[in-house]
Amino acid sequence: MNKAEILIIDDEPQIRKLLEITLESNEYKVWQAETGKEGVIMAANHPPEMIILDIGLPIKADTRFLKNYGPGTTSNHDPFRPEQRSGYCFSP
Figure 1 (cartoon, helix red, strand yellow):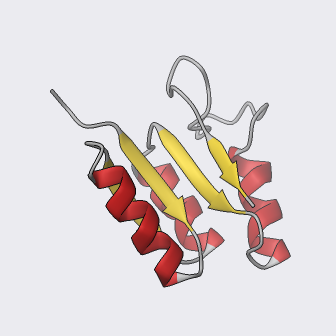
Figure 2 (figure 1 turned 180 degrees about the horizontal axis):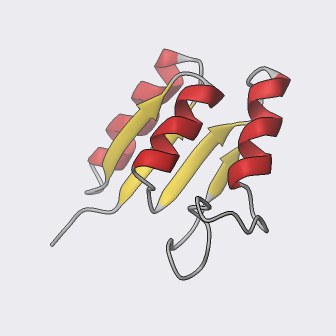
């Protein structure tokens, strides 16, 4: 059985590590990005089943990410389209 993949986008390494340990111990495969820009690239190249996004990242990165990948977008690259992905999560 394939593990569900989760992308964590957060600029704080200790938060990414805590989430990684917690998620991997529950059989998830975890990808990490330190910036919104890096997260957009990772999500476009390898769309995960879930994205955990630190919405406290610099505002340009957050708004660009949400505009391109947030709920309700209709882009072909949208990892949240119901027929492509199973869920998303935004973390404050």
